[in-house]
Length: 431
Figure 1 (cartoon, rainbow, N blue to C red):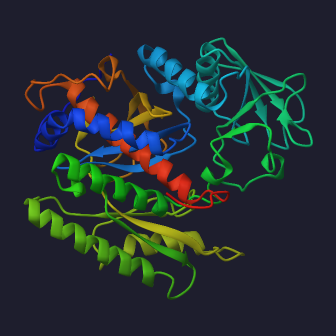
Figure 2 (tube, one colour):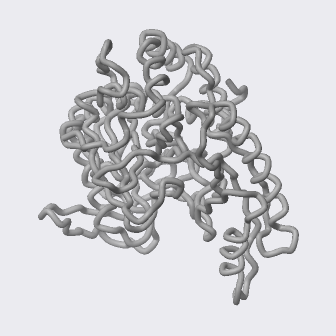
């Protein structure tokens, strides 16, 4: 089922849509050549915002949950992509070990694990779930809401391999972003494939590194299509080791907020955009207690200061210094059933395999929708993001708009491959 979109198929984005459709053969060839040189992440998802005048990713997740939100129509495509991805890494693979997040799992996350297990099972693999959580000391069976059960088993570490009792996998799939650090149990595994690699986790990864790579590929694709890359790329800057609890800790943030807003205002003026520009302040790696803060004016950082004060008040231990990213805010002009929405595109290897709309009735067009209270509407992608309808008037075709989402999603995936190459501790030279 394709959700009813209230505003997604109107507005000036049509000109960009037309450029993308006219350039389709060149775009597909360009991606094909890029994948000959660069290895895509095993899987990932991209949060995309459609502002009506630009379409850009605002976050790329290398350990995506939420697979249960994909439309059931898309499952065959996801299975096919999983087969291709596994075949490339370990053609003779028989057993796959999936390692979930630590801690107590929500019913939503358990449904995600069940979907991943089903998907790889249909791709021809024996799939079991192995927990590295020290609290999981014995095999645990969990009831799911739909009558299904899920079995979590404690992982057993050998000298050079990881497995379960009576289960020796050749491939290990992490669905755990390692935000608490890389546990020793996952280090120095030499005889098995660990996907994604450890340096994709938050101890190494920086969002600013990803968006620097994205900026590079967006410039190249923009040149290929003959469009300003800003139309598909959010500007950003970063502040390292910000100490929010100290007097001068906010100075770097204020300076970067001012710099990014000035650059965005210039673009808005160039394109005659009447909206008020804003930026989003967020942790450069993982998450932070501060959350995601929207700032509309460098002079007005009171909201940010208030949040910092609330965080630091009454604390016994000071807030540790953290790296932050200041990113151009991208409005969302999409609505599903009158609620603000944004598309989230899912990739397996180099293929778009579906996605969903993240919907939040309590949030505004300039706020993060990835917050408590959000809901999900599957994106059927009208059978495939790679099957647009040439010749149809821009703004009149859902498949054409979905094709655009797929192009931006794959661009984020390509940026992730550049990012992982640049941060690979075992690489001698960087691409």
